[in-house]
Length: 285
Image (cartoon, rainbow, N blue to C red; front, side, top):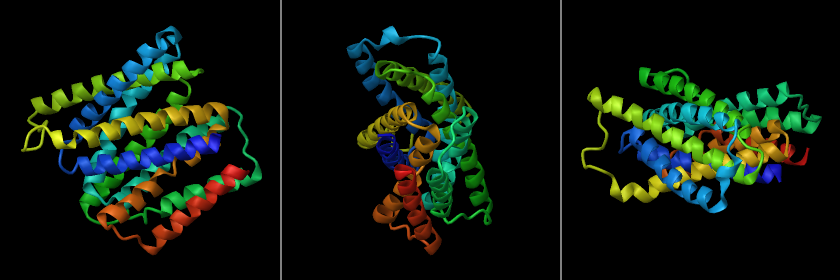
């Protein structure tokens, strides 16, 4: 079940990244973050009220607050990087944040078996190669890489924090709700400051009403992925859950290839294959 939930996480994160990357090419990244997460807050609010999850409030929610503060920084950095560079390059580099939850798992005493350890090495190598790393190049490319590395650390921190934010299913709903409320507050303040400094809040055409379904999908897919990952990390080894959940760049790369016509280089194709081999080793180890 750990492998199933973690792979579902990677699918949803990959699709959310693809959608978010497209949206930020037409709408300011901060607006994408605030609107998409506001939709998630509304849906989670209904779930929390219906399940009585408020009874699960406790000190662990501070982990959710911390995840909510780190998340907008990571998302904003990542969306800006996606707007600057090819998705097939940026997304795999963003998965390097897997080092954070894996490190936490190892620090807590988890020791993967030989097949799982091999799977971790193969999967991480595959994810990096799936991007056909391009560190050299024009200043815009270097800026995209730096933003992606910042986002990677933030994503890894969120994974580690949200896994500690609850111990029950209803507690997870509440933790995700608190995380998203914090996301919206922090992102909203950042958007306000940006507008005060002369930055745009909307594209020239006004509020992207036609993009609202896509914005809703991005927010809901992201929060569902967080919930699935937290569940996977709770019922199985964090080291395995984190690596399998970090296969999402393969999904983003395939989507970019199929819908945008971004061509895969040989190294990217090989990387995608290695990532799949690594996931099999992790799932069966």
